[in-house]
Length: 437
Ligand SMILES: *Cc1c(COP(=O)(O)O)cnc(C)c1O
Image (cartoon, rainbow, N blue to C red; front, side):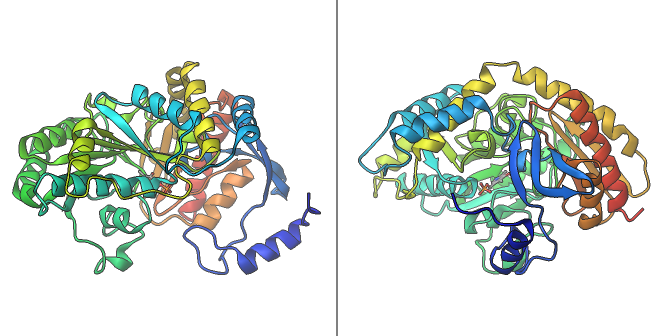
């Protein structure tokens, strides 16, 4: 092991050489250095605001559903490490990949039979789109190569996913002239429990019908739009999309990278609507936050179309495709989830967040407070002062990462009641600080 860096040296080197997400170089704010993590606590290299440990309110961007340093996942990684940590997937296969693929077919909505293991969520979306475009090409409809989505979405940061992210609010409007031009419906009316708006449903249907000849697929995040604005919508609109796609010969891609594995209260968010997509993307919590891996699943119809086409292969194959370490941990993570009352835990956390966030309701600068599954959101009426909000949360011993007009949390499912209450208080404090109060 190399000599550990002193905290000062670490931060100086970080500032000089290391790019952080969505930031300039060098970064505007000094990041907090994490030394280790266990359960729901991140241990810092040195105390900040009197806290050496922070309760993680972010699950490392929706992924660490079991918390950190979990013995079952550690064991899965260690066991695989001693066998083989990586081997190419072209012409070779291995038990972790096969087990994981079978597991994914078993737990995902009906009709998804084939699994492409990718190395990140964005890549799984690229693969999903490539599958759909190639399907239509293969069956003699090459003009069907555009995508339809609704505004307010987020599907990743590589090129094709960027083209279906929210064109205004998103992080990618800089490239709007260069990206493929997709078809956008208005953002779905807000509210998971809100009665579906027949006029909006009609508009969705009409847009699919109008563009059917050029549409390869509709792609949306079901029920919760995550990084595009943390908005919830009625599952009824997903049924509308499913029907419209079936009626007009358009494929349906559901991006469950954020919502998958229980986060919204059902194992997959599409279960709220009782529908199956033709193509499904999963990622983030797939490996319990241990390693980078995502997957694209598709129906036999899509797989057959591609494989009997003019170029009868799916031309995609990441170097680290089906990485055995990641696959072994992913299989263990899904097994661990299924071995417990995950739905009860998600419900318990949701109830705790509802109670904790109630204090923000009607507070100055607060536009909306909402909770679904184990997701809690306080939306402000202005851009949040991220530095002030983060400081306030850290002052409460909690790690949050607010963005745009949002202070939000999606804690690990293993977060105890006291820690959920602490996160709730921290979100409220961060929202107060974030409006400049
Ligand atoms: C995070 C996310 C992605 C992108 O996944 P990466 O692993 O960051 O590439 C795509 N879609 C949704 C819904 C996401 O939340």
